[in-house]
Length: 148
Image 1 (cartoon, rainbow, N blue to C red):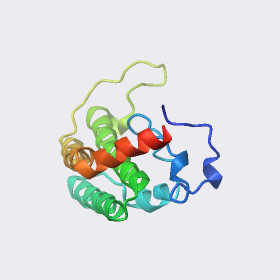
Image 2 (image 1 turned 90 degrees about the vertical axis):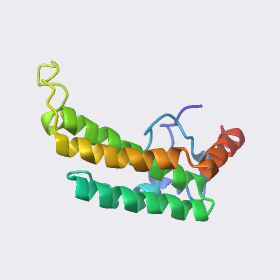
Image 3 (image 1 turned 135 degrees about the vertical axis):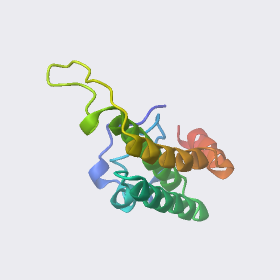
Image 4 (image 1 turned 90 degrees about the horizontal axis):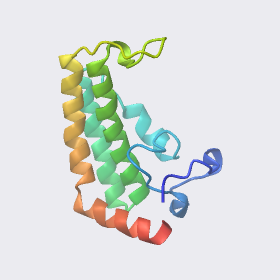
């Protein structure tokens, strides 16, 4: 089952109601699911490799804290923010200003920004650690089996 965008996200505390959370694909719901969005988003940055390193380490630390608390939804949200750090940094690597299309809908010229590429690689490392974590994978399977 995919991510359910029809929920009343403004009024659901997913820590108290994990049964309402659907994993979905990739980064789906990353900016909707509370209280995790408010806990993780302030740390999400990728402008430079130093900033990306600090950001990805903090978000991965949150992943580990959620893991200690046996909080799958928190773990999955941290994983999504790490993934989003990678994908957004890659977009800025390839396109100045992060815009793939111009105002007429044509694809902008691709430019490689090595600084953003390094930021993306930093996030990729932490994202891979999170998505391959054995306990995360077990909890994910259990959550999907129990709640869809």
